[in-house]
Length: 347
Image (cartoon, rainbow, N blue to C red; front, side):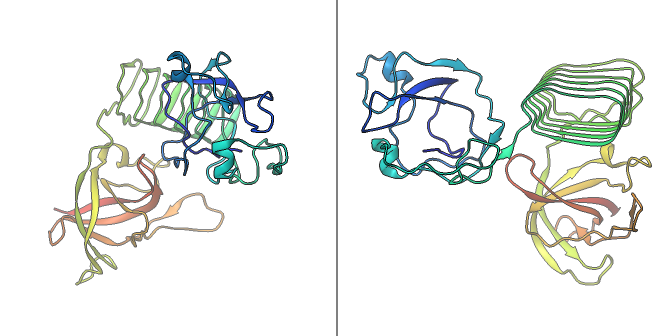
C-alpha cells in the first residue's frame, strides 16, 4: 500500500511511527514516516485505518489491531522524500480499511527508488545542500529543501521555491529567486536580481545591480552600491482584454478575454545583454489562451530577434494599446497560466 503523495490525514507536525499493516499477522510491524503533502495533492478516495492515532492515544482510546502502534512515534521535520510520486494509488479499499495480507502481491518499484510502479513515476527533489564553485554558465535549481552556497562566476541562476538558506558570493550576472522561505545573503558583484515572495530575511552587500523585486515578510538589509526597487510583485488588476492579430489590425480576433494586468516597469525596463526583450506590464490569463509574441531565434545565436506580437487592448473596447513582446507559461502559486509580457504602445 502506498498513498502516492495523496493527503491521508491532517496533522500539526510530522513524525515516524510503527504500524500494524497485516490483518492476518497483527504482531508484524513496519515503519512509516509522515511528511508534508504538495499544496494541490489529491485526497484519499476512501476512509483509512492508517490515519494518525496521535489524538486517540492521548485520549486513552484502546489500541486497534490495524494501524499505528501507540508509544512508537518519533517526531520528524516533515520533509518531502528525495523521490516523490505525484499521482496514482497503491492498494485496494479493503486493504486500506482492513489491512493487507501476506498473500497480497508486492508490486515492482521504479528503478533506483522504493516507490511502487502503481504510483506515478517519482520526481527527484533536491533535499541536501548544494555547493557550486568555479565558472558556471547557467543553473536552474528546482524546489531545494537544503541550503545553497554559490561562489565563483555564474552567468545566470534560477532558484525556484527554496526552503533552506541561500548564500551567493562572487560575480553573478543574473539571479531569480522565487518564493524563498529561508534567509538570503548576497555578496560580491551582481548585475541583476529578482527576489519574489521572500519569507525570510534578505541581506545584500557589495552589489551593483539592476533591480530588486520583492514581496518580503521579514526585514531587508542593504549595503554597498545598490539600485533598489521594492514593490508588491503579485498585486494585479483583474479585467478583460481584446486581442488584435497582427498588431495594428482593424478588427479584434478575440474580445472580452479574462485576465489580470500587472505593472512591471522596474523588472522589464531592459539592460542588454541581460534583457533581450523589454516590457512595461504583463498579463496572466488561462493556460490554454491563444496569444502570440513575434520573437524568433537565429541558429547558433543566443539572443532573440524581436518582432511585434499580437496587439492587446485593456480594458476591452478601450483605447490603451499594448504590444505582446514575449509569451510564456507560469505558475504563480494557484495553477498554471499563460503570462504575456507587454509594452504599452499608447495610452
